[in-house]
Length: 212
Image (cartoon, rainbow, N blue to C red; front, top):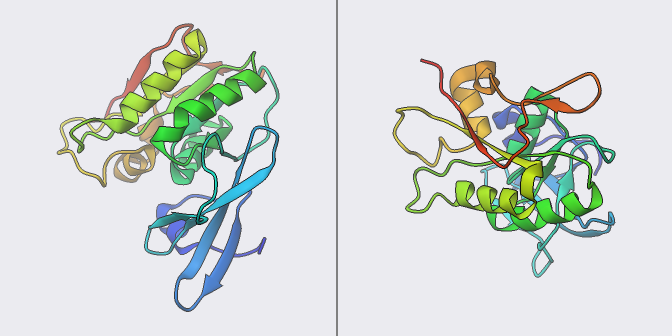
C-alpha cells in the first residue's frame, strides 16, 4: 500500500521516499522498498522489517538494481549509499539526491550504470565504515566503485574517532545519532546551480571527523 508507516524507519528517524508499506500482526509495520533497473523497470523489492532485518523477494534479481529517492537530471550531482536508511540520512542532511544500492557488493555496479546514464554528473559515494570487520567491506567497495568511474566520484565516509569499533557504529545514520547534525559538517552541500561544492576533481576519500 502507498500510505502507511514503518516501525524500523521511525526508530532510525528517516523519512519515506518512494516506498510502500504493509502491516500484519506477525511482522508489524514493514517498509517495502522498490528495486528498479536503469530503465525504471521494477524487478524486486526489499522488506525492512520491524526488528531491523532485511529481506529480498525470494529468487528475485538484485544485480544493478537500486532505489531512487529523488529525481535528478544529467549534470546534477547525486549520492549513492548501501542502504535505504543511509541514503535517506545523507540526502535529508546534505540536500544531495541519493540512490540506494542495497548492499556493498552491488554499489560498484549501481554507480557504473548511473554514471553511464548521467555522464555529466558528479557522484558522492556515502560509504559505510565497517571498522568492526576484519576487512572493511564498506570502504573497500566504495573505493572500488569510485575508481571505476574515474575522476567523477568522491567517497565520503563517517569517522567515529576513538570510539571502539562496533556494528552499531558504522554508517552515517549511526554517526548522526551520536553527534547530531554536526556529523555532516564538511560534507558536500548543494549550491544554487544544483551542482555541489566540496567535491574534488579527483577520486578521494573524505573522512568526516568526529567532534571532540
